[in-house]
Amino acid sequence: MNVVRVTLWCVVALMLALASPAQASTTIERTNLREYAAFAEWVYKDSQGNDIFASVVVSEIAHKNASSVPIRTLVVSIFAVDPEGFVTFAGIGFTETFDFTVAPHLREARLSATLPIVDDNTGILHTLTTDILYTSTAPPVTYHSSSHEHNGVVSHTVFNGQMRAAQAVGTVIVDGVNYTQIPTASAVIARNQNGQFSITLP
Image (cartoon, rainbow, N blue to C red; front, side):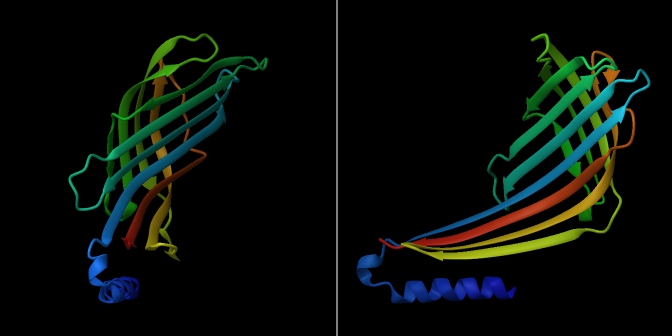
C-alpha cells in the first residue's frame, strides 16, 4: 500500500471518527477510471504531389474492477490538397465501435474499424476502413499528480499516467485511396488512471 493511499485512508478514518451521530448520513464516493489510448499522425506529399494530413485518435475509458460499459471513442481526420492548392478531401469520422487492444507495458497496440466519414467539400458520406499497428520505439515515460480539496466536500484525487512513443503502420482507406502510405510523423501509446475519493458531510 503506497504512501498516498495510507494518507488518504487516515484522512477518511479521522473524518468519520469526528462525525457526530447527526452526521450518520455522511456520503463516501470512490471513482477509479482507467484509460488506454493511442494517437498517430501522418504528414507527407504523395506520389501525385498531393499534401496529405491524416490523424487517428482512439480512447477507451472504463471503471477499474467494475462491470460498467466503457466509454469508447475513435476519431479519424483526413485533409488532402492537390499540387494547385485545391482541397480534394476534408473530413472527420467518429465511431464508438472498433477493435482496440494494447499489449502489456504498452509495447504495442492494434486498432481496426469501419466508420462513416463525410467529405466537407461535397457533403457526400463515405465509408472509411482502418487497420493500424502501433509499435513502441522508446522506453515508457511516467507522470503523476495529486490534489486535495476541503470545501464542504473532502476530496482527494490522484492521477497516474504512462506513455510510450511509437511508430504506427497500417491503412486509412476511403474509396480505395490509402491516406497512410508512409510511416507516421508521430505516434503514442498511453495508459492513464485517475482515482478520486470524496466525503460529503450532511
